[in-house]
Length: 287
Length: 294
Image 1 (spheres, rainbow over the protein chains, first blue to last red):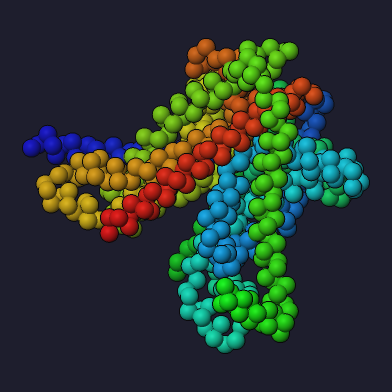
Image 2: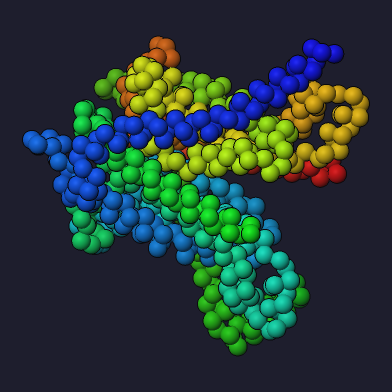
């Protein structure tokens, strides 16, 4: 009998330790990223690092400024939001309120498939189809803010659609019935009553979409051109924070290596801030 | 049929009175159409252009500079997935068991665990790649290797498996547990003999989805698994997964590399298709099982 009690207690402890693993993982990741990044940032100077436009690891003295890349990341993310959010939101409303029952499972499956396609496939597709299209029809060489925005816009669609749809479905039926009884059309009720009621879920989906877009690496590297310039138009080349890391990591050493980790740290801080914003958002909803 | 026509006529009359509603309705359909069209376009493009490059020597042949085949990448992908799942699946399933079966409601530490899992889910794969290369590669000294890559992606898929396992455990009706306790079974026995088997399809679906995530991963693997083009001899060897092989071929391979990339893309997309269909089939089984139980 006593042996059994020990087994029960022991297994509970074991499960608890496993559960603690994710906390440990987050702390480890934070520690090792920042422990490498902070000395490099200190050496370069925080202000020079964040606001410098020149990234010259091969010059003497070396220069490490990531301002253009921060702006680049913001540009392509904004572009992805401009393209992905309206389509995703309309798609979510369609799925939640207007979709015929018979085709709903097919569409749902398609959306989750869109989420499952690897970023390398999106990048390759962008490189082979979207970049040449921009090259032929607009100015520049095709590798551009616009190409990256389109690819990312498609990639965030499933995030926006599935989370928004869930929150649209969670709006009480009585809201819609009330609107319809007052003579609103189905569309008016969807846009003026249900959508505002599902606002917090919609905002959550957008924040998660921003997180996905700003952190995306492979798809962006393959279509963005990656020159370290401040793009003056959407047809110009752009380098994001993620691209900077993936392009130079394989041959970097010394301060250059640490500066790339620091680039990752800046990205990581962006993501943590987004997560915090999300936490505030959901806790407000609960209150 | 008559009813449908009458319904259509009513709808048209409404739209004639409120043209804005018609515009909105068309926009909604257009948005969904665009979404589906982009999916079909991406998959169709890869398949139409890739299938012709899918020759036996490119898939199964030995890798050389003349024949940039993917046989070694297939083997590496399989090994990497197995090692990563052996690490991640037990850990995340046990974590989910604690969160659902043992933790008390409103427990502070549970909140912190949830927050940590959500944070893990939001971290971009390139940051995982950096961490893996620093910690597993340099600090633990495993260098570029399958082990380094597997540990990195194992952490990456933790939140995926934890969340879905939690959901499917929660969907097991309480009456099952009560029945088990009523027959004198201990908590541990109840968890392993009653709760986990009932939740198994959902857990499997989560594990399968995480296989998809690992197979498609590139950014987290380039600096952990590395990109050496050879058949791995041991877990401490560097190699490429299919996705990494596709990226490197596109980047460095010129025209021939592009053809390899197309062929690899066909294999990748096919794997993802099968995985998604299988996962949703299993997930459906869970919700079906739930209604059976009630």
